[in-house]
Image (cartoon, rainbow, N blue to C red; front, side, top):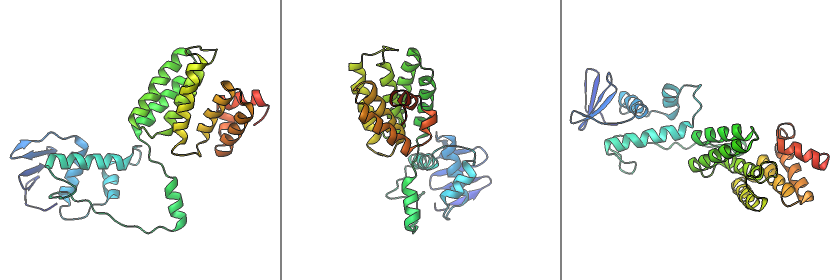
Length: 256
């Protein structure tokens, strides 16, 4: 960001002025409406005008270590808000320019990096709320869970846990114990959700667990269900002790 000149507690660049004390950005003396976090990012960039400010420095200063959010998503959103306020662009930057840094990784580091999944915090929160109501195992609780899982999908259409959560809910809603839907209505919904969960990653034990429950409870395809339950536990051994659906499998097959 090119420097124009400093005033006491202020920094002018072009037609803009950053007031550090007030935490405000102004254009021709008029305050520009911009959220607090983008203002904090802009203030740090202004204070380091002409220098490269790393993402790590921004994270350390503005996102405390105990803040559990998608930092990259938050920072990119803040930069976009700043550019919008400054009528700037990433293609032809006048004030804020991002610099790409190339890092050479060895094969082991590359493999580990591929396994890392960024989670949309809003979708994750909706998913957790859905699981909370799902675990109540009541018809009303399942209806609320269904709404939260659909909300999570709306917030992140690629978030696999929301889909297998949706499948588990549809499966129980079609069960005779709750009878909110008929099996004929529930099965296609549950299977479609499982398929969506497995599309981006076929190694999700929970999704195989959900598929097995559909094969067992609706199709009565016990051989295929048993294979899916075993695959689920192979991929995620913790499911053996914590999943109600796997507990049902033990009752059906004796052992998985």
